[in-house]
Structures are given as C-alpha cells and as structure tokens.
Length: 276
Length: 355
Ligand SMILES: Nc1ncnc2c1ncn2[C@@H]1O[C@H](COP(=O)(O)OP(=O)(O)O)[C@@H](O)[C@H]1O
Ligand SMILES: [Mg+2]
Image (cartoon, rainbow over all chains, first blue to last red; front, side, top):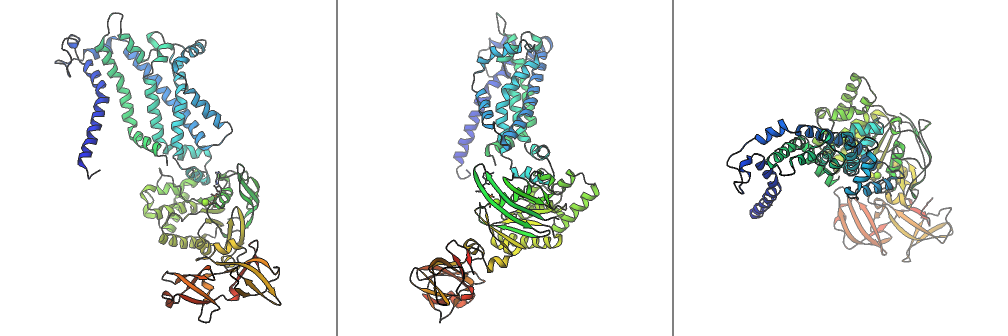
C-alpha cells in the first residue's frame, strides 16, 4: 500500500465517488426540505436554494399527524427489534451449540420462509389477523414484522455464536455454571456486537417497512411513518417540501440508533465475517 | 481429592467409534498422564471424565460414585484447556474467582483463595488486567490459577503447554510438577509429548487408536514397553526396529534379518522358532566399538550439543545411534557397532513384547 501513492490516491477517490453517489439522494432530501415552496420550481436545478426556510419542519411537527406516525413507528420498530433480537439470540445459540433431531428441518423451514415474495403473503396474513382484531393495530404489525425478521436474524446471531469458542462455556460449566448461566454470563456479553448488529438491522427494516403497514393499517391513528408520508400526496399535488422535511425527521432515530451501536457494530460485522 | 474409576468405557461419535473399552483406576493423589498421538482419543476420554461428552457405554466413578449422568458442574473437578479458555470480558482476578462466585462463597474466602493462587503462580501484578493484555505464558498461568482457587476432587489438563514456546514449556512443566507436589491433588494430564509424559507422570497411560496400550510408571514404559507402539512412542530419538525371523537352535536363539544376517539373542519362551518377530533397540543403547559385530554406513550426523544423533545403515536397514563421544562428529564413512543382548527388546508377529 504505502509504496504506491498513486494507488492510494485512486483508492481514496474511488471511495469518495462511492460515498458521494450513495449520499446524494440524502443531500437532495435535505435540500428540498429547506427550500421555500415558491423557489421549488422557479429556480431550476440548483445545488442549494438562494433562500432557506424551516417552515416545512414547523408545519410537519405542529400541524400534521406526523408526530403520531413517528411515535407509532418508534413503538413498532423498537418492539420488533427487541423481540426479534431476544428470540434470535436464543434460537441462534441453540442452532450453534446443540444437536437435535429436527435441526436440519427447522433450518430448511426457516430458509423457505425467506423465499416467498412478501406480496403473496399479504392477503392470507390479513385474513388471519383480521378475526383476531390485529389489523389496524400496532401489536399486529409487531407480530408480522417479528415473524418475518426472526429467521434471518437467527442466522445472523448463529454466525456470531459460531465465532465464540465452545471452550469458553465448557470452562464455565466446569467452573460450576449451568449451560444457561454460561450462556448468560459468558457468551452473551461476548456477543454484544452481534446483538447490536441484529438490533440495528431489524430496527431499520421495521422502521421503513411499507407494504404490510399499508395493507394492515387504515386510518392515521395506527399508521407508521412510511404510510404517513403518503398523506403528503394529495389528489392534486405532492407537497414535496413537507414530505422531505418529514423524511429528514424520520432519519433522526435511525441515525441516533446507529450512532449508539456503531462501536459494537464495526467490531461485530468484522467478527461475524471472519468467524474465529 | 478423590480416586477415579473408569470401567470399560466406550465412546462413539455417531457410528464412528473413538474409544474401544478403556479400563483405568486412578488412585487418590496420583498424577496420571494420558499420552498418545493426535487423534487417539485422549481428549475425548478426558472430556468424558469432565462430563463434557456423554459416555456411550461403561461407567465412570469419582470417589466411588457413578457420575455418568452428572452435569460437569456437579462433578467438582477443575480443567485447564489447551486454548486456556479465559473469559475475555473479565479481569484476571474475576477469571480466577468465577467458580467461587458461582458457588456464592464468602467475599473474604474468595479474596484469600485468589490471593493465595496468585502468589503461588506469580500473578499478583496482573490481577486487574484483561486476558488479552497478557502474554501466552501469563494466560497459561491464569488458566492454572483458575483451576487451583478451589479444592476440586481432581484436576484435568488437556495439553495445557502445547501453545507455549519450548523454554516456557520446560519451565511450566517443572512448575506443574512442583504444584502437584504441594497440592497432592488427583490429576489427569493429556499430552502428545512423551517428554512431558515421562517427566510429570506417576503413571503413564499410553493410548493408540482408542485403545490403552500400556499403563505403568515412566521407567516401566521405557524399560519394558509392552508392544511396538509403546516402544516406538516413548523415547527420543525413537527405538530402532529390525524385522526378521526368530530362530531357535539348541539353547540359544538368533534373529535372522531379511538380508540374511543373523543376530544372536537371548532365547525366549513363548515364541516359536521360525515365527516372524521384530527386534528393537534404543539409539542410546547401541555400542560403538571397533570390535563391533556389525558394520554401519554413516548417512548423517546430527549434533545436539548434549550428544550426537548418528543416522546409519546396517545391512540395508536404517538405524539411529545416540552417543556422547565427540569423535563421532567426524566418524568416517563407516563405523562398527554392537547391539548388546540385554538391551534388546523382542516383539512377536502381533507386535507384543516377549520376554
Ligand atoms: N465432537 C466430535 N464429533 C465427531 N468426532 C469427534 C468429535 N470429537 C473428536 N472426534 C474424533 O475422535 C477422535 C479422537 O479425538 P480426540 O479425543 O480429540 O483425540 P486426541 O485428543 O487424542 O488428539 C478423532 O478422530 C476425532 O476426529
Ligand atoms: Mg486432544
């Protein structure tokens, strides 16, 4: 690396190009959200408006149902992330450490659930949830999201457990722990990166899910924010400024969340990749 | 402290048999070394004693009590792993006290036990460190410390020194021996290193292919190996073997080698004249003498400082000689050797020792 400065420069430029490419839509989101309505179409394509405003933000926060959507999303994504991570940790540990008769079939079944296009499942799920009173409700959404995220999260957690040497819990068991105590006191603390990665992954997936939120929920009370965004599209126009402002606000929890777990996440993604 | 009784214990992984009926009685306070080549089932046997593997059939008793179905935590044993298996998120002190904390021992008792172990192993300055800030040798000591903080019924070691460099290994070997001298705890020590086995053991259990080949004191195994495997495994450099036929004529006997050479040997009962046999002699027992009966072509000289390992060929058969005669550093193309009769080992066609 160090011997070829040209290569290093090219490498950095390539990364820069990628970052710009990936972040440009976000920048545009931000730009439109602070552009006053009267400048939106009149100024042509500019990188930054000649005048900026926060009126879209104040409108969205004060006069729209957006705070409700936001709160709903937070509840749904948060509960889903926590539930899935707990289930996936236990299931992933079992798959990683235990040999049991139906293991092969359970894994196969979990993989199969990942193969169907979700659209196919909307109708049957609606049919099932409706008599249970779980349509149009946040717990219903949490249930569906949990069901869909558990298999992948389980495989993710399993790969983290696989990366932790078996010797550790064997040592703990000889030291006097039961297998569950060894799991809780020795293995789990070492899997924090994996748990953070799983939490983050599931949280974002649930946070931005649209299809089921749209199909299972009607009415603003239980709408999550992706559905809520659609309310900015009226029959005659799209209020881009407000929509973008809502979008920027919706990014905040996801960003905060990743900021919180990023310390574990970087460790975790690499640890999971190398796998002991 | 306790005795351990292993009765016709077998182990299979699925349909794959690993241990074929092991019988072994270990006395209270004894230091037993399980030795054998990699894959012979030493770790499996040790892990079965620890309760980490199920017993396929047979019984394991600790202190006269059958433990086949007891969880590891209820067997009251301590184990040192080859990987050390230190808890990475705990300090050295917490690593050592974990077993006592699980038993909810009193704080003062924990402190004194950890302190005592730390003094014994020279770990006092390291107690607050995390394992990843320790060298290999220090980690090894912590693993030992974790085992000795409580007084378990037995200590199990699974190749505890094999990740250390040679110098450190030597040093720790002596320390383990000293520690055993102090604690007099029943210990089972697994290694593939025959020097470790010879130096540490009260009794060695030599294993091969999931079968116990010989049990005995280190010198018994060295002086009277029960079969070809033990003969070849114990000792370094390894024993020389000559295959041939055992022939009796009157009241003395000969070994006839394929080349036609005959070597006079002591007559043994229990081996028929004309049967296939293998003769063995240790490199350090071959005598170099100008009057020697056999001529040996010199192939290679390996000086070790302590002595010289000579690779020679006798009647087309490769052989090693160990000598401390420095003149042998420049021996010329051939030397003459004698194979003293009282140093010869004889094994029958099945590889069993005949006396
Ligand atoms: N969990 C396992 N599943 C299947 N085979 C195993 C397992 N553990 C060990 N073995 C096999 O058992 C044999 C003995 O292994 P081991 O006791 O570890 O040998 P050693 O410690 O003497 O080197 C080896 O052939 C190994 O492949
Ligand atoms: Mg082993």
